[in-house]
Every structure is written in C-alpha cells, then in structure tokens.
Length: 64
Image 1 (cartoon, rainbow, N blue to C red):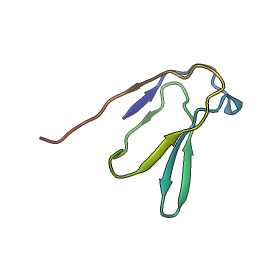
Image 2: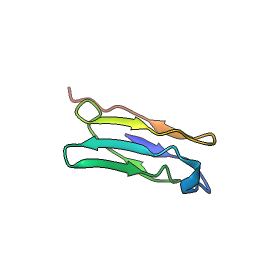
Image 3: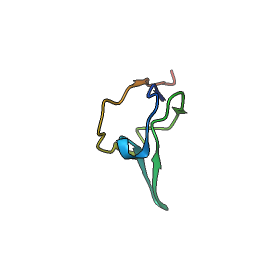
Image 4: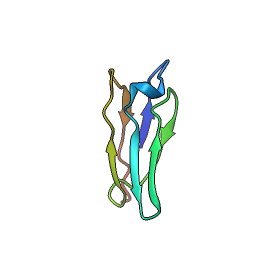
C-alpha cells in the first residue's frame, strides 16, 4: 500500500505510479491523501521520474 503526502502536486512534477496490466498501463498521480492498495508481488509496477521530491508512506501487508 502507498499513501501519498504531496501537497500542491502538479502533473508536470511526474512521479506517477505506473502499473502494467495485460490490458495496458495505468498511471496513478501521487496526490496528497491518495492511498493505493495493490498486490505488488503480482503486478509489475514502477515509479516514473519525479521532477521534485516525492513523499509517501509505503507498507506491505501479509497474510499469516
């Protein structure tokens, strides 16, 4: 999971989370307060180049 902490983030700032799927790619803007939950072990993903400091909290949840 990722929670973004970027105030006043603009599209030109970059830093999107790109998730690769069989149907194409999805880009998620790192906007303040947005949370993203996905199975990182099952989905190919990357963070695109950011043009300024990008802040987030990242966590991994496991099933026991």
